[in-house]
Image 1 (cartoon, rainbow, N blue to C red):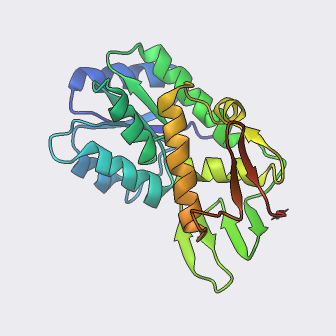
Image 2 (spheres, rainbow, N blue to C red; image 1 turned 90 degrees about the vertical axis):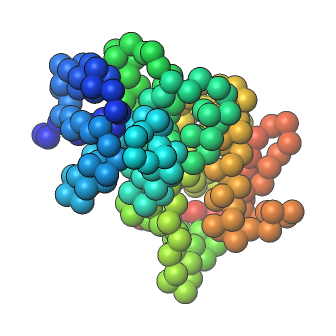
Length: 233
C-alpha cells in the first residue's frame, strides 16, 4: 500500500525541513515547495492526500490558493500560519480549509492532525459515494452536485464533509456539538462561523430560498435537520 502523500508549501526552509523529516519518520511521503507556482506546476501530475499551505507566500496570496485547492481539487487542506487572529482562522476555514495550525507548532501535533484527517477521510462509511435526493445527485468521488438536467456544480472538500453528514442522517436533528465531534476542529466561535458559511454555500448550490430553506432546516438553539429522503449507491 502506497504511503499517503503530503505536500508542504512554505517559504521558510527550516519549516519545510522540520515538517518533511517528521512526516517521513511517521511513514508519509512528502513533497516540499517554497513558491506557489512550483506547487501548482507539481499538481498537474501529483495527487496529494493532504496539502499543508502557509498563507504568507512570496508569489501568491495563500488564501486564494487554499480556496482553489479546496474547490477545484477537492483536496484536504491544512493551513500553517503565523497569523493568530480569530478572523484569519475564520476566513481560512470559510474558504475551504479543513484545519488551521498556528506557528510556532510542534511537528508532532501536525502529524497527529494529519492522521486524524486521513482517518476521517478514509474510514469506510456505511454509505457509498453517490447520494440521490430531491432531484439532486451528490457525487462525493468527484465533489460535484448534479441536478435533474445533468448540470454540475462543484463543492469543496469541507462543504462535502458537511453535506455527507446531513445526507447520512436525514430527518434527524444534528446539534452543533455533534457536528464538531464528527468533523473535528476546536469548538468555539471560529468553528461555528465556518459551519454557518459552509451551510449557507450548500444552500446556495442547492438553490434553496435563504428565507425558507426546504432541505437544510435550522432549528434555532438546537442545530439542523435535513428534511428529504436520501438514497445511496
